[in-house]
Length: 75
Image 1 (cartoon, one colour):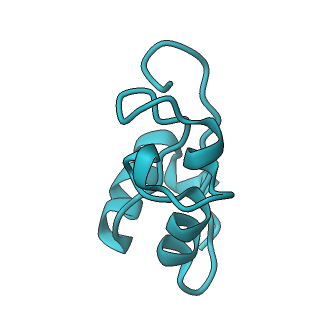
Image 2 (image 1 turned 45 degrees about the vertical axis):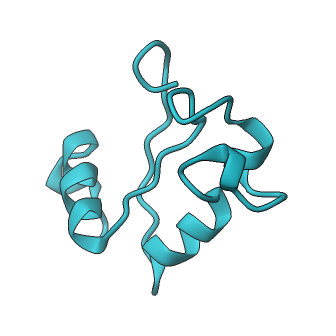
Image 3 (image 1 turned 180 degrees about the vertical axis):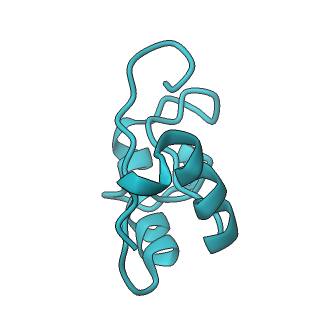
């Protein structure tokens, strides 16, 4: 729960990273997430969602830059 505790930030750099990561984490609403996804397993509800993943390459750049400096990003 990003606003009330420690978080782990990461940037996944690979072909189709956003699409593949969103498949791993599941639908934003955990009640609609597929079985076995991170959100289905660990999220309480939309407000306590357990994990965040960018929804586009453009937003991934913005969000990654919030957590990391340009020197810390490989690609």
